[in-house]
Length: 162
Image 1 (cartoon, rainbow, N blue to C red):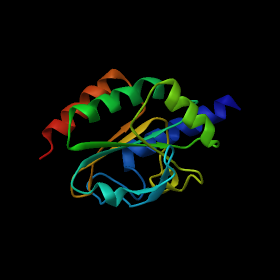
Image 2: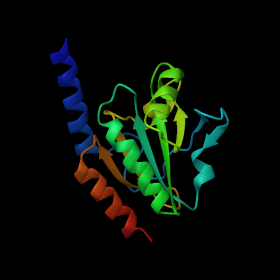
Image 3: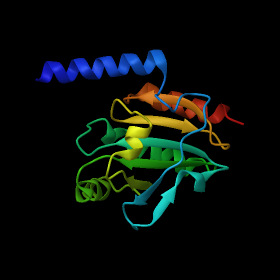
Image 4: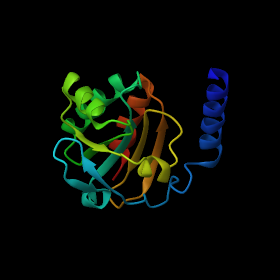
């Protein structure tokens, strides 16, 4: 069973790099959505962030690299006034995500994709995955997984945006 899951994941990643991100590809307008904020319960829309650079970061509590990536993305957002991070959680239970945020003392905007609609809309194949969206709402960069190089690349890509 593990081999099947690994094979599917590898194929999804290869497809992602060869053909882009489903209906949301680099250069296209990022699909809008509304999700509940994990902490306040208020609905937040991607459209609300027009005029800012946005990183959509898809994460889960079972994702080991997310423990490193989310604090780093939060740090980037605090250092750059034009940047907002929307951390979209895909866990089955909201309480797991809330406990994770508390454990790692994360203050970033965390949204709950309860029905997996947004992760499906963007056809995200791996956790974490980061999508960088420019001030006009266009997808500029995609990052699958996480390592220190991704963070450096994300920071450089953000600095190069107008």
